[in-house]
Amino acid sequence: MANEVRKGIVTAVHGAKAGHPGGSLSAADIFTYLYFEEMNIDPKDPKKADRDRFVLSKGHTAPGLYSVLANRGYFPVADLPTLRHLGSYLQGHPCMQETPGVDMSSGSLGQGISAAVGMALAGKMDNKDYRVYTLLGDGEIQEGQVWEASMFAGHRKLDNLVVIVDNNGLQIDGKIDDVCSPYPIDKKFEAFNFHVINIDGNDFDQIRAAFKEARTTKGMPTAIIAKTVKGKGVSYMENNAGWHGKAPNDDEYKIAMDDLEKIAKELGGAN
Image 1 (cartoon, rainbow, N blue to C red):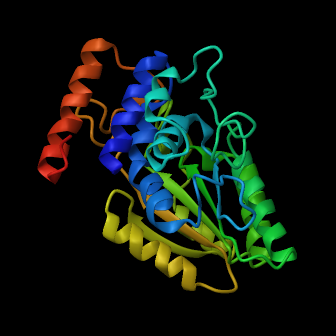
Image 2 (image 1 turned 180 degrees about the vertical axis):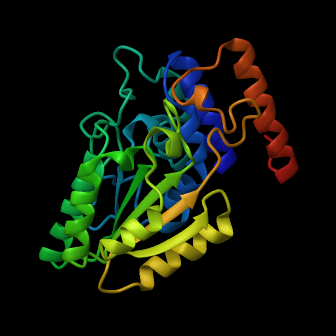
């Protein structure tokens, strides 16, 4: 399914002739696990009161969120190529008023985690048992607002909150440790009273174990630092900062889809 999500990402960005494939592809396994295994959700009732919430703090990777929502049944996969088109409900950044399954509009980096912390606090105050998940970019955590929200979450002991950092090592201007190093990421979250788990974010066994550990962690929020490969699954995009925010042309699109079809055959799931 994660491979199908990656196909949807490439198809959407190609259809838009714009967008952010690199960070969408790196997080595709996390998106897939969240929506197909981890979260209490119902595509037939996207606004049900007791659902788990997800906030895409790195909102520019909307193609990844849209692809997993489509494959999960919130709207047709066939609509993915309308990404960023005039009149499409699939805007360049997530919009909760337009897109089924989107719990929070996002795009301005640093703000999504604050919204997620507010949702988690509301759940505690209302004695609800839903959980809140938010996905941040490792370049995004250069924003100070991220750490204000983290300080508050740790202070309030929001154990219904899981912060995931997609640590693919690259941002629009290059390597994160050249632009403004956020390392050590794990120690920073520990300093803000988070339970921290370091994983390979493209390994489903480690993803599953991390989310199970987060569920059993009480009295503090959890931060999952997920080491990933930017552009994962597409040969020429992998570990290439140039594909942070660029769409493939027709020839590049064919190569990308061929790469993903090859993976599908190796997995025994070719359509």
